[in-house]
Amino acid sequence: MLKSYMYHNLTEAGCDEAGRGSLAGPVVAAAVILPKNFRHPVLNDSKQLSARTRETLRKEITESAVAWKVAFVDNNQIDDMNILRASVKAMHLALDGLDKIPGFILVDGNSFYPYKNINHKCVIKGDSIYFSIAAASVLAKTFRDEYMKKIHEEFPQYGWDNNKGYGTAKHREALVKYGITPYHRKSFTLIDTQMYLDF
Image 1 (spheres, one colour):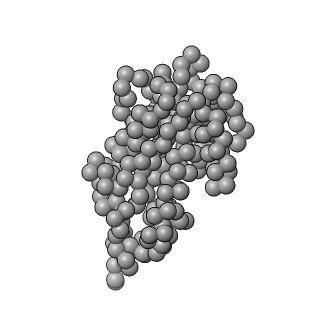
Image 2: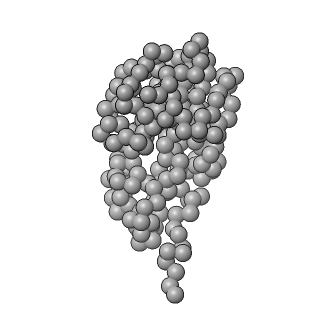
Image 3: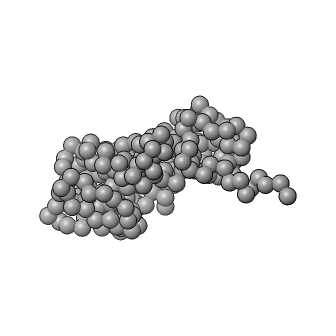
C-alpha cells in the first residue's frame, strides 16, 4: 500500500501531470490534498489502472479530498515555452486553484520549479509511492482523456478517443494523410520521415 504522507505535521499537496509525451492536445496537471488518514487498497499510478477503475477512483478522490484542482496548458502554449515548462506551469496553475494552501508539495518525477515560498520534493515514480501523487495522476489522466475524447469528435480520423494524442501508428499515418490540426504540437516531431522514405 502507498504512503499517506511524507511529513505528518504538514498539509501536503501531491502533484502530477498527464500528456507530456503526446503529439496533440494539452498537458494536464492536478494538485490534490488528501486527509492524513486517507487509505485506499486500489489507488496507484494511473498508468497501472484500467480506465474503468480510474473513473471510479476519480469520483472517490474528488469526494474525499480536502482540496483538489485540475489545470490545462494547451498545445500553443506548449509550443511557445516547451513541454517541461508547460508541465510545471500546469502544476503551478493547479496549485493556484486549491482552496487550501499546502505547507509542502510532493511532485511526481524529477522536474519542478519552486512554487511561491512552499518547499517541495520531487519523487521519481512518486505516483506509485504516495497516495496524494497517485490521486493527482488519476485526476490529470481522467480529465485529459475526457478532453481528448471530446476533440476526437472534431477530428475522428486521428483516433484520439483511443490513442489520446500519442504517436501511435494510426495517428502518424493520419498525420501523413490529413496533415496537422489546430490541436497538434508543432514543436514536436509529428511525422517520422524514416518511416516513409522510398528506397
